Length: 393
Image 1: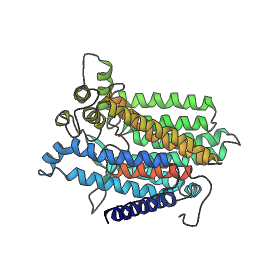
Image 2: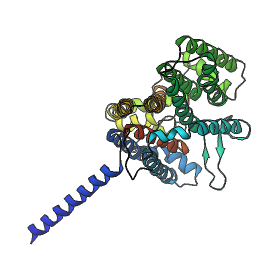
Image 3: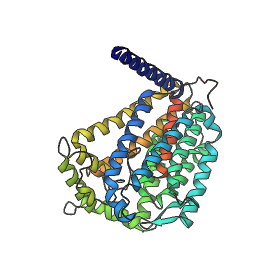
Image 4: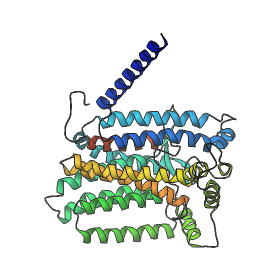
């Protein structure tokens, strides 16, 4: 009797496993490595964010230490839902909405500049009525700009460029969007502009146009910071000066170094971080430091490897498409996600000045998690290739 029961249990387990594998094959299309890494990072982030946010939740939410745990878990789930539905849309259909997306992002950036919610002397957020949730239009602008720039470049990649097309389309568009972001978020604007220039180089925009445009943008950006003409000019100057002054250690960086030193090779253990009590918002900008403290250098290395695999698989998705638009779209969005991740980790270990960048799919985030889900869903859509089926949206 016991043996028959065990056999029945094994059969049920096998059938359940087969059903799960069938559902995954039928529903999670595209690159399985990208799916796997995104899911693992989101699940891991729930544990780390909970550990890192306990102090802030207790002090800011009347002792409700699980507040950020529930909020982050819900946003992780919603991010996966967004990825799922976006990845089922054939990437060719994105062509019809890129122009609307980029111009809507420009309008939102202008609105934020004058009427946005200000935090730390920077108007970066728009408050959504009724639900009370804030979001950064710059997150939407990153996805929208890369998508529309990919379309513009794809249309001209074989036919070449004339001067009017260059300045009326890609260069002007990048200058407008990045310029609007620059007024309140210098690091995001610089990173996005760099990725756009890389994408334009791949799109065969003449090198001399890129060079002179880049020199001009750097000149005006430097001038804007020195003349304190942006919302965060003073902060940017102080951070750059502190980075190059070896006698000065920024408080956040000091606490970050201490956290990683405590972690050693194997870490202090899950939810055993001590520096989370001293790091400003450790669940966001410096979550990599908390990760290394709790999981050690080995844990930090695993996270770095996952982002590198994500970079490789995102670029490999280009092989699945025959159209330039798909290749440029996948490459551009992959660069955005991975460059932001390595920028955040570089800040944590002191390789670059403090920037305020968060780890995509890992830091506690609001709508930024959803926009990252949109970007990854679009990359997965490209990795599906040109074939579609009846169930495709």
